[in-house]
Image 1 (tube, rainbow, N blue to C red):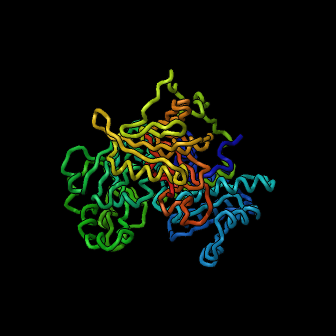
Image 2: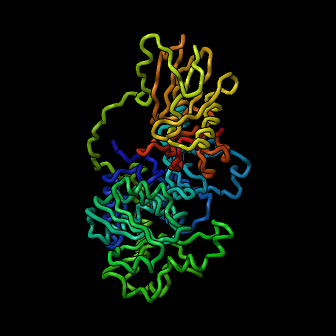
Image 3: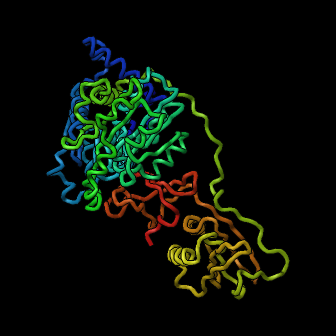
Length: 527
């Protein structure tokens, strides 16, 4: 089977390293055919079906990405439709799912979406695939993310990686790149946190003032991926040290998104990330500059005096965009990729579903156990102990209020307590006398809102059952959890009724399955 056909590209990691290298090999072949005007080879890339529906839906302004995809679709001799968002049902309150399910029923196979809503392509890929299956459609609709808010821009990442490869003599051994500019808003640089895994050894230098710095979650992801990461506050600071990258990737500062305080500092912020003539002699030989474009016409971070210099890699980078998107559409349509043989996957051993809830022995003998200092033992009930161990008393009390609401404990008698251990650490305790039956879902809720706590089931003055909890690997099917990113498709502000899902990170936090925003366990509940 063609492993690309019907695939969505919502984030760059949706295509493996091997799949992207195959895509790039086809781009290289297509570019050579166009340069040689080899019509036979060019025709072998075309979908060449006037009934094959490709939809462009740009809910945010774009010129280069939109026109690049438009020309790529026209190359394929396919049916290209542009949804007029100015007059669309989005403005009447219609949901994304209803809108796209409707046009899928009209034999449209590929949807190219740019939106300020983050994670929308992933959601639609899931929702519309279910719609197609329910209605017996003979295809799976594919969604291509052409940029979603501050999240990712995976097709830009494809053309960036291809251009880096061209200038790296096609080697994937190592890459040293400086990312310069607005790294906070720049979704093109956010895609690089995973995209640059294409190279075996990666060094990334982040050049931006504090106000425009790369979000911590993406820096963490880079480090988790084995990248060597350094940070610098300005180009001048960067050039005043000796280890300078030969590939520089600039982004446009989007200061208009950051409020009046930032605009008041606009000149100094722009100055710190704008290349100047005086820096020319400080660059290593064979340095190349790149930019996703457009440059700001008044304040370009790559000034126009550099256009005629060997530093100019951004123009070829832009041209590569159409070739990469032609090949991407051909792969997703199933026209290309039959000769790609995916690497055999090694299945990881399955872990026990409830490894995050461990039952340990309760009381032995008849001795009644004190549940905490100064609290009278209870005969029957539940005791939740070791809450937020190591936090301050005020932090613990604040979080115990959240636990009570999440676990629906406010309507019962009992109380809370903060105690101090022998080593000076504080911990919280909640006790509720009475008879309680906690099912699997309730214990999972407790593990999600109070990881590290111990749940004691007290019967006849003894701990009949004791459970130790840690963060569940996934959190979903809870009506009262929500991604705090208001731009996320799963946030209530979007009114799309998308079921929130969180996936545990290696450092015991939660990443939103749609927008990628990282949360602590204290942030995911609406209460």
